[in-house]
Image 1 (cartoon, helix red, strand yellow):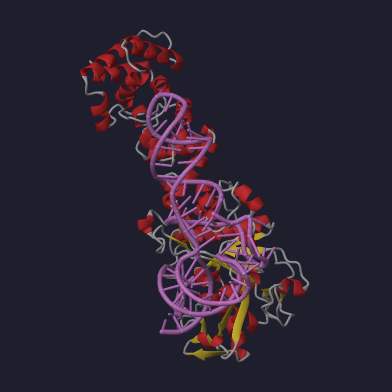
Image 2: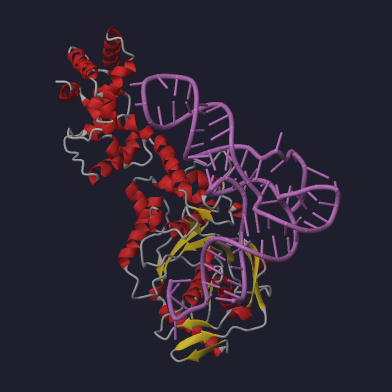
Length: 468
RNA sequence: GCCCCUGUCGUCUAGCUCGGUCUAGGACAUCGCCCUUUCAAGGCGGCAACACGGGUUCAAAUCCCGUCGGGGGCGCCA
């Protein structure tokens, strides 16, 4: 179960359990406890998902920053599955979470470890405390005795010094009556054994930290450095929830967001890379990341900015890179792709990628290229196809285009402009009605390119459809 | 109720550590103009903030105190 190579400077205790941070210094909470110990440790962080649901944006952000720090420091990023709740945990959730992490571009070192397989260890450690008089039994449970009248202090690397009185901390459950370990206890046992050097987690854990530090003390271990990042809120300042437009990574993937864009936004919600670097790739972020610059103020998830970032990331991708993604969105959107060549799709992507906010937008924007029964914009109809002269112009345009030997944009444009001039119109006076006729839309790519991709036959048929 | 974190444009933020260079800078959104075949993209410009009240100081967004606001926690959930 414990597949890792042994942590740096680890040693085994009399029970054969590997411990990596045996305390020798008296100042357990000294900010540079590692320096005091005289040991240079590889940065080791972890992400500890609980497989009781999908990967929430907040969790994704926690994983992301831990990963960033590990990669920047050339340290290790471990995964620990907190599946002590046998009832609510499900492997399906875990698989989804791992899938989402990979999709975001986050990889981990070593196999994940599972808390559910380590119950004997937690019990053994709790019994040590029992034997040492630091814990007591209450029924089937084992509780930790919190010494009153003192303070627990630590230097949070995001918030600075935090101190709480033990009078405000109740005795803590170590092992529950059903034999499973409490969250805080299993967490400490595992973090110590894994040699975790830095714990970066959400602000919601800030009050757990003093309790955990008490456990480290009880085992005479030097605690890791802790940092708590503020939670992300919804646009209205309330807790991020479904009604804000999606809380799971999966939802954003399905909406057509690029992982790089989602990650970019999540990064911006906790760390500012400088005015010239707001749009960045994960790789760039790894290089620039500075944990000391992380923000300590809660930020609101801004869908508008995400959309803009997504558009920026899409524009930077080549059409070939976008192709498989676009294809899956087309398929998901019910567009049959049989008989559609990659060459055709590539050219269509060339034309439209600059206009996309999400990949999914492509499906709606380009529907006229895949079907003949596309919807026609009502406002546009009134504006461009209501007058008889519009219809006549379209009819004449069809005649001109039909005579074209080459159906390339340049030739189409020349024909359009010439006809417009002959009819005493501005080119736009012909272009807008024509676009509406062939696509049903008042917006889109350049008309001549659209026509070329659509092909002469369809263009003529559609023009004649509105101007028989 | 108690404990903890936090408060610069609508939003994300720079500045705060070492008070004066801040008539507070950038980005998203928004508005206007340019470009233009529409929509985008791009270029240019506008609007817009130091939560409030006291101090300290020649001088405070920057230091101190209080108030108010936002968030989190106080489980044999994780």
